[in-house]
Amino acid sequence: MKRLFHRIKALGAAMLLGAGMLGMLGGCGSTADNGNMKIVTTVFATYDLAKQLTERAGISCEVKLLLTPGGESHAYEPTPSDVSAVQSCDLFVYIGGTSEKWAEKLIGSSRKDKRNLRLFDTVELLSEETVEGMEEEHEHEHEHEDEETDEHIWTAPLNADAMLNAISGELKQMQPDHADACDRAFREIHTELLELDAQAREIRETSPKDTLIFADRFPFRYLTHAYGWKYYAAFPGCSSDTDASAATLAFLIQKVKDEQIQTVFYLENSQRKIADAVCKATGANAVMLQSCNNVSKEDMNAGRHYQEIMSENLNAIREALK
Image (cartoon, rainbow, N blue to C red):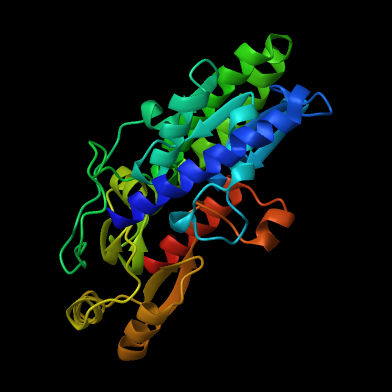
């Protein structure tokens, strides 16, 4: 509740400043100053899919990710310039979970008649769950109907494909002259996402083990659900906690020993304290999985794509399940 209150309060101030900025921008309207279409996104996965689509279709478009590369996505609060970018863009693509209530508020105040794509509407949603040994939230920060919904919908390749299809549909309506090119671009990326799905299914069918250990937050609920993998983790995906209790740490250590697990996962931007403690006690190896919520500045500059990152994740899971 406290985190959500601060976000809404910050958004109110940002919206006031953003409105002033729009007044100064004058003729900026709904396209960039160079005449390009503008798309604004809230997480890396959607940014990357939109950017790949427009580039492969030859659509002149500025795609903006609101998160700063390397930044912690769960602590994000929109700045005045972010608000201005959302208010003035041609298409706003967002997920729709509790951490993006600021987006719903902004849409209701200044984007009712503009194109907004809520990706929660494109996939079957799953609730966050508290599995055995996991730390429970100490305070309820959410009081909305989506309070238990896991927001990391893109971590399952077929979900990413559904999201891609929705973005493609919006682009074809906005750029009808590029509809055929957009269809071709969609089919190319669609094929690559189906290859990821096939890779995951092959791992599930051939691996002797089926249990993953995350000594960190767990944003891969959709991935493990899609392919039937079991998991144990320190925290749910959107938890604000970073320090596990002695009981949680002891549980993970014992689970690694009991299951004879050789790999313990941690997330990008993690301090690794829990993973290192579990590995020190068990002799397991700590390996990073990337949630595609955000990426590092180096990965962004290198132009790494969702497909490449998720394939690396799946290869790491393959090794962990041997």
